[in-house]
Image (cartoon, rainbow, N blue to C red; front, top):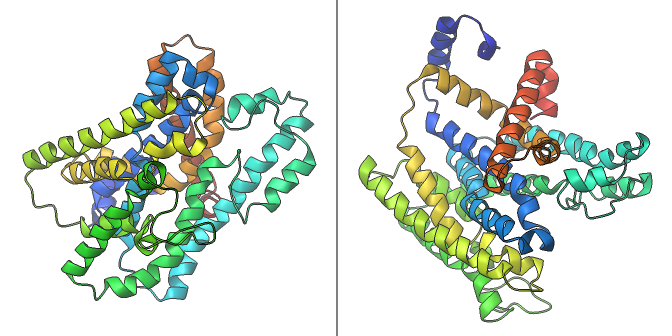
Length: 393
């Protein structure tokens, strides 16, 4: 692989020849989004349990980091829309190329995560190791083969406490299924039609707040109907279109982009942070209420996401070494995503044994997890490149 070529001059020439149309800032978005995702999962122990939320210092830093990191998933989706829309391939070819490269690693890692509790039992480890490694595992997780088998059989239906990050893969598969049909409209859509779609979609971002503060049923929904007036414009498809739409339309100067991004991010962050802090300060809140201001499809997270997207577009990376590093992380990206939740658990155990100040624990754990995950995936690609594309993605 050229990434590991010792002759950097040759590597640089090969890179320039093969990547004339390569979008470096897209790699930068992906790397930032990966780091954000890892940080979010490293902050889970600060936000998940009621005990942690009652600790003022844990609650403070869990809120600070948690609010800051919410754009991670929307950035991934916007990047997907930017790079893949409109779909030009025949539908069968698109599904074969994109879906298989996601579904196969997804199955492999779903199995590994769900087999892990059983392996710890075979090794004679106390089930407390699962509670320490997986934030959502609970106080007394099962290590039996029966519960392991149950989780495996549930893979086609949903994720569980050991595969929390893989919720994104379920969503991504849905977006891939949807994209060829969405593209048929997009290819003939006018600028005005795209703006109307995005405007209506933006309104749908307020629905969770309407359901919480106005009525649990909005727009014709009820106990026997979940599909209200704006349902068909809602969800992550808006981020798909937004990524495509904003790809080449930011004509603002760097200075104006920075100012606009700071304003958008500050407003979005303030709503997210103070909303989450207010929710977690209340006793007996539901899980849905706790997550309300952290929802990815919300106006506050939308503002922060757009701020990041517009700002990163203006970043100019000229160093061949940095460009190659970003490209390598991009190639390893899905693998890092699949691996990192194991490393997060190890990171919890390692950082707990170091007497770090509370505010440093989340970024320190995240940096450790990122480096470990990247090294594992990059090594896998170097040693077993053919197998790596199916195991790591």
